[in-house]
Length: 408
Image (cartoon, rainbow, N blue to C red; front, side, top):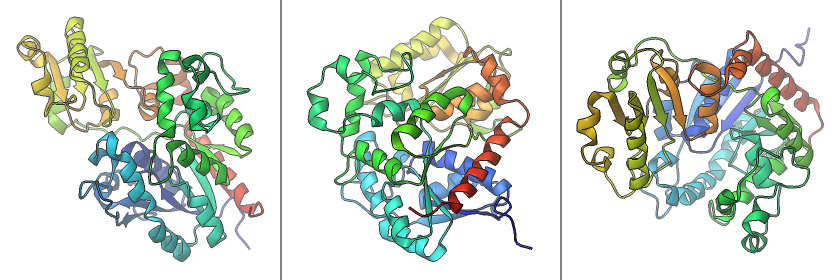
């Protein structure tokens, strides 16, 4: 008796962008798929393997395939992720990423998987079509509203440069919200779309081509919260949009051994600690950093701040305002390295979360903690029994549906 389509196991290649904000969500999704018996080949640079292998919960089904990153002139030797380079060099990292083409082609020709999941490798759909028999899913780990505002507009740089701030922030036609929009003061942020991000390709082209060429678009969200934006993307790109749900890792149990965090947090009352964390690529100016820490001092609450050294400094300590350390003493802990954010958010002492509003951080805080974000309704929904697992099960059914469709 033959196996039904729904019961057959998928073979999937994961090829995310070289940033931990992309690599980790792809690994979280890989774990959920492997949990249901599907086989994953995860393509990543050597330097990222140490960090990612700790998150691999199903090593019998998830194989980490180490890529040999080409060296590009201007990149520091050994630089393999965005954590290794300043923002000004990310375009060179993208060039190195694109130069993996031949290695990826050979890998896919040998493996012939059912699917390739990708985001920044805009050339994957054409490559899969050339090889034949492989479906592609552009799995977006950013807010759908951002994709809608940024990518569904004129791609002409001269048009952008000639536009006023009011024209730039005007939503694209039929955009489904009047409140989730850019302000005029944020108009300049859109200029990054036309910056080169890899040799001969802009950020806009890299993102748009991938979404245009793939068989389907995957989104790391749920219909209850961002469904209107996902419907808009489906209409504009004329593609099926598949929901995975937030796909969050479970916080590990036990003490926070890193940097003595458990001992420090246990000193304070429940719900009294302010936790502030910014992404590793977010570098504050020295004045901004000083205003931030002085603001925390004024709260008179204990605080944990995780932030990179400000511009022009070698450490956070040297950038502190005069007398700050003596005044705050052990009430404030400032770190400039990676910390287990999920576990910190889940700690009983943490009562407020200050974030740069990265997409992953937003989901973690909404679903897994009781910190002050006005969000009780969403936490109850996201943590309700079966809510997230149902999204993954439906996502897998949608993938099987794509396989039976005719090849483009």
